[in-house]
Image (cartoon, rainbow, N blue to C red; front, side):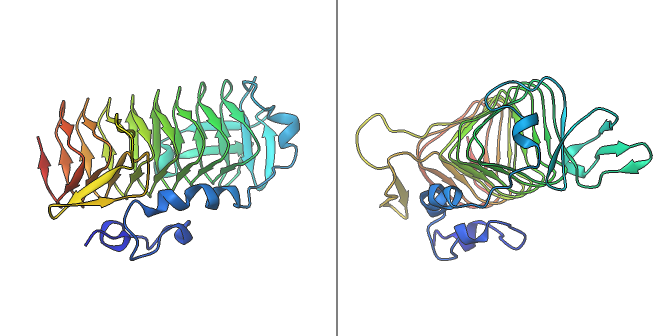
Length: 268
């Protein structure tokens, strides 16, 4: 059976209301807009003074305990973000849980939630709404087009474009990807250049073929649904409505046909 509970381990997921166990695994995307529009976004003290809307930051900004701080007199150690090694100190005192938005990043709108230990690198552009989980790294040139939600320890990679998508914990799209109307399960990894096509050429909703029968997803746009532990190789492409069960692998330079691919499948 295709269901949320068979695809994803939700034990440590902060945004659990999006996921109902018996729903089809793509159903959280249908709920995403309403969920994010009603989310309680933090308004950082001095945030509007320090982070100008739609204007590149002129210096690094620190987010700590609900405040936006200039990086003057603060020291930043750029360790591995996803391993909690990004550190901000004032003298000998560590600002625990501090996040860093580097100079040159652009934030648009005020519905942007930034968790603890997050790094947003220079050149990243983030449009509201966006929810970025703890210890997540948004790399240089990443483009978040709105309705992007991540769990913990995720990577939103260099020149990667993401819209209306969900990353569960430890999902990584490190390089040159396009991710639209998609869900990346826990511990998924996309090879460089992976593209998730999300719109059919012909009119109508995207269907997913399962056990020789098409299932109408109710969605005009649907990219890929990757269950926990899936991987894609470099320069791979998924057709609209590609659904990969746990541990499935899409080989490099391969286009996955739409529809269901069983657990631990090797798509070549």
